[in-house]
Image 1: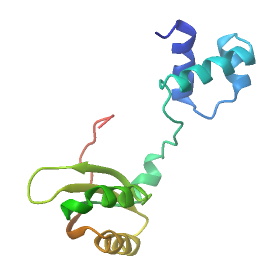
Image 2 (image 1 turned 90 degrees about the horizontal axis):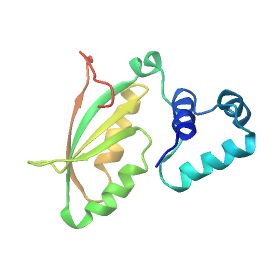
Image 3 (image 1 turned 45 degrees about the vertical axis):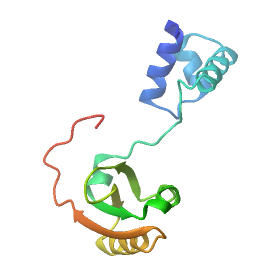
Image 4 (image 1 turned 180 degrees about the vertical axis):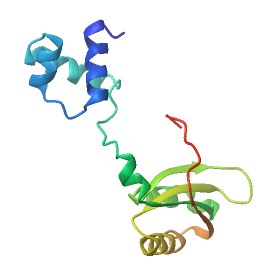
Length: 145
């Protein structure tokens, strides 16, 4: 169960995950040691999973994005998933029903980089075939989706 100070700490971190312990302590009117202890408790209990970077809309707008459908040899699924996880240009990977087994959401800085990434995915052991669809324009995107 979170207390009010924990909730306030989480709210501050959601606004700026890079805030210093000193700044957090000042904002919460708590000592640095107390904030450090609460932060460690939230991490240890799994409430805080990780600290991340949120990219700006202007940066994301300039990326080339695509959905890549991937057909995988069943015996190599776990290995293929592990190798796909290691590719930082893949922002999400979903298991799906139908002809293909997976859909990867990929982002590259150029069409040339996207082409190389698609080759890398297609050349992984266990990948039988891929089909990609480049995203031309985002009509809308709901927050948290």
